[in-house]
Amino acid sequence: MKLIVQVPCLNEEKTIAATVRDIPRSIAGIETVEVLIVNDGSTDRTVEEALGAGADHVVSLAESKGLARAFMAGIGAALKLGADIVVNTDADNQYRGEYIPALIRPILENRADMVVGDRQVAEIAHFSPIKKVLQKAGSWAVRKLSGLQVPDAASGFRAYNREAALRLNVVSDFSYTLETLIQAGKGSLSVAHVPVRTNSPTRPSRLFRGIGDYVKRSLATLLRIYTMYEPLKVFSAIGSLVMLAGGILAGRFIYFYLVGQGKGHIQSLIFAAIFLIVGFQVLVIGLLADTIAANRKLTEEGLYRIRKMELGSPPDRE
Image (cartoon, rainbow, N blue to C red; front, top):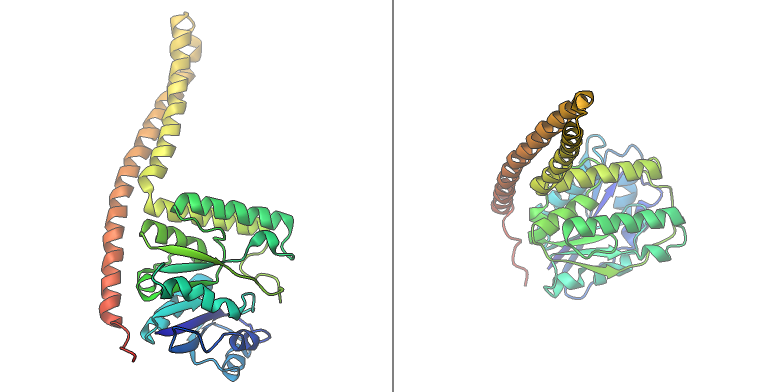
């Protein structure tokens, strides 16, 4: 079994060496552990520091493409290098390498295709109360949308077996964490979680500008991805609400018409017609989107098969 730990990086020269050295190179059940640096257009000495600390491979993007793109570039490279298991960790040394054996254990025992490290957010001292509340709320929303029982949806400390890695498709430019969970839930992948501890922060997060930005982008990502997988539910809900508003306005007009005051409420009839027509159109769009979603599933299956043919199975290791 070959484990590759991928580390997406953007100007992390101060912390990348400690992150690489913290990764255990001897794990029970694993024959080979290698470290893959995904350089997302760094302009400092990130790569040199990583190689000096013992990193085995480097994939460099010409310019910064964002965390989601860097993550997928790392997944592709790890698969080409013959990884049986891929672990993703952060370059700022947030996650402790000592927990990697526990993170991959459910995969080694064939109990999961994907494992998420649960940071136990409520116990993280440097998280503000508002951040803890938002993390819990976000994880609750992801559980409802994905059908998975993952307590820490925003955690980037994750492990994937080869089959799960081959099936990953990330379209978001913001982050991969929420999208891959919804994708796993809708794709019937087995997902587990294990408790982990984190190190003290070495720098502020660079993924978002503040709490408001994080909430806005996370909600947009959740809505977009869920709509991609369950368009009929989303458009049916929207269309039904619009038609309900139209029905209420139509009922209002009918009431006043029956009591002899219909002439003064023609605007209710006009708006009722508009709402009913728009609501019906939204429902039709939902049906079309559902057909597109079915084609998307076929496309994802085709991409999976193409990747499997291109990358093949990892070589046998005695």
